[in-house]
Length: 478
Image (cartoon, rainbow, N blue to C red; front, side):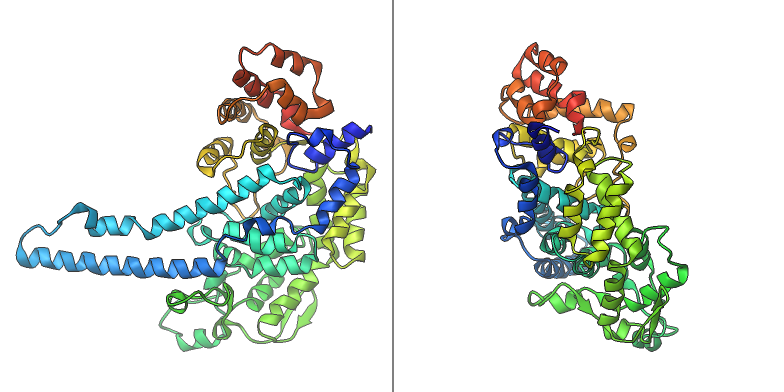
């Protein structure tokens, strides 16, 4: 592969797409990628955003205000009955207005701020490989905004758990994600109570409490071993018992001040006793029992192969070369799940740079690559409708399995028609740069004569950009 083709692969196949000036870089493409594994994965770019603990406090304040609004509505109703007259008064101060305004709006604005920061960074960062890895792991550990308990915490989980552990060991990443409020709430572990826990014994016959296996099942099936990784239903149940008590601060604990952490271990809800998972017994050790199981799962051979396969599929091809997966899994096992070594095994593989290796852009890839080529960051209020139309709204996969990472999920006739519509909308988001110059940035040496001729003949810069983004060449990360 020539140097210009290899640079194009570094920017597109391994990165998020080229920006103006990128095709003129003289960096060695391999070095360009490895150098990104020594940075902070963009963490510093989000330093001004609230922590998850701060969001817990904001939620507690919102719940308190909603309770107050309900009491006010009840009082108003009693006054109407007693005085037999309308007490609605100024509509701007009505209980209905109180309930809809203020608090909830502030939380929705916080979510928009998170998404604006996320997409703004993706479009402007020079470290496209690191940012693509962040997005890979966010989809691997998927939570979905359409389930309200996870609404505020999906983006913070990416910031706090994934970026902070992107180049470290997988066990640290795994523990950070599984104990984050986004995951604990999304998969209902905050409701999981051991059948023989102190709280279950205390309320026996009064309240319906019980074990919830959602998080434990997805840890084994999706996050570590894989569906064919050799675990049993008994392992699911035992892991679920081990992580009972993993929770988040309650509103009453957070109303007066920001809690010290967004994770809380509740011994009264924890199922005590030894647990046996995958043939190994783990002594009763409170929260550390779950940590110990996760650390062993992180270095299990099935985990190494399952996650290495997903990484290779994401970067190389829907059916990744077995030799590459073998090298990555061997690096995983040899170095205790050190992720930087696994990434190096990927980019050191000649098959990863082959001209036959390519991936169809998902809607998120498509949108970000277009904005990077135009050097045009946009607020999420303008981007989310495009992503929703294309079927990949931010942080909303509607399944713990995440969004699909295969061509067949995104290249159907209806999907391609919507992508043409999206291309027209993207071309209108900003002052239209020269489409041929933008194509040279976006496609580099993969700009073919037919596409170039079409762009030259476009009736306007805007229509030329739309044709570029709708072109077959732009749909692929090559």
